[in-house]
Length: 105
Image (cartoon, rainbow, N blue to C red; front, side, top):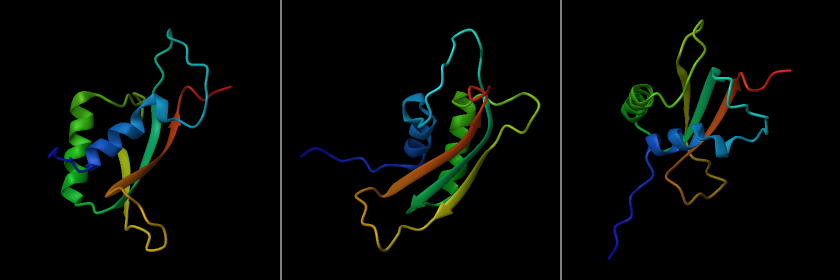
């Protein structure tokens, strides 16, 4: 019997930061070090606020998100309950809204 590991808040937040999960296609050049201006994560499901705090610490320690040097380097997090109208197979899910320097004219 194989054990199934539950999806954690850290798993969701790490996946949200992965470039392959971005909905906007930008011409990222390798020469410019682009960074985040602001991030808001909306986490839905069975979430303990201490899990969120630990996840934010791990992301900061591992430097998974590069922020602009002249502003606050923090990820804002909003927690919400699961929708009673939409069934979900996942215990925790998330949405990230971010402003990134790769989106410029």
